Length: 420
Image (cartoon, rainbow, N blue to C red; front, side):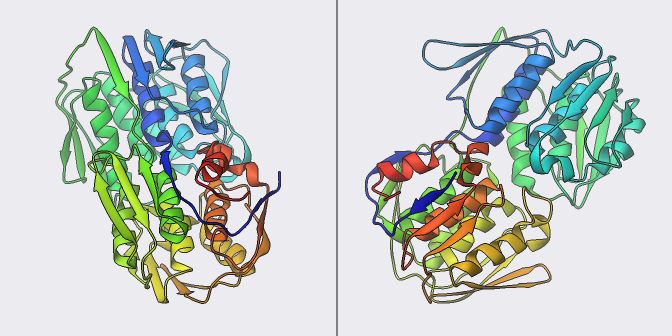
């Protein structure tokens, strides 16, 4: 699909999409918790749909209620032998659900789609045998074959590549009744995402002691509840693009983003403030508009998904913006450091990659061009937002990549006055 965005001003109020980070964790917890769970404000991105498909395959019953909420009935992981589970293109889905699948003593085959087929998953081969899980992989990549049952044990893992595998281990250990067991983690990245995992687990009744993000101890305490109700948070990852759009072409009002959230991408507010964008807060509303935008320093090591909207913002900031954390970008839906350099380069932006730093020479404006999403949802959204202030129309090839996380993105831009 091609999508062309004309330079345009924005105004009005928009509701942020549901967080797929929150939604997918809620799906996993609802599967693992025996009984009834009601999920309010559920997401319907491709990644969310994949997560719902996984928990159905693993034994949960999911029904849509009248108000749009989801009712999940579960007896835990009750997969049948020979089952093939498809995680779609979700890195979180695969890394989180693989240990959960390991709770079953049946053989489960794991598939994926798109870029997920090429993303490295070597930690399964390294860690699963230590927990009693038999695993067969394709050289550390999909497809996988998993057979448990998982036995919680004291282990040490490397947290430098992703925190998502740790999320799966925390959930599966808790569901397996771990008591007096410790997961040690070296060099953990994306700590706020683990905060989100622990918050979801606590909501569902599982307690884990976080010892300075270096050790996670399971005391074995479980608070039983007849029924759990969980409301999916607004998504700071998708909301970041709306906020940048407001800073470039607004003012607009964004509803549904909790400034107290543990989501890592809430840090977008720091970047916007440092850039000189105008910000105001009221209840669950954020008003953001253009200011005298200037270059800003930012460390995105703990929130690498912010790189695309940060680049769109920095393109219009006078001076040189330096963003740390480029090493976190290699194994996303695309190699995002190189992809941002190439696609924004087509619009006239100069980006240098220097080790772990991205150096953006902004303030010169962008020109109309034809760019490609590289099948990466965040690249498509970043180019669309940047196009709002470009010198001419920007056409995005394979623009449907947004469906992975924010299917309504283009429609929301239209509602705000964007000319698409």
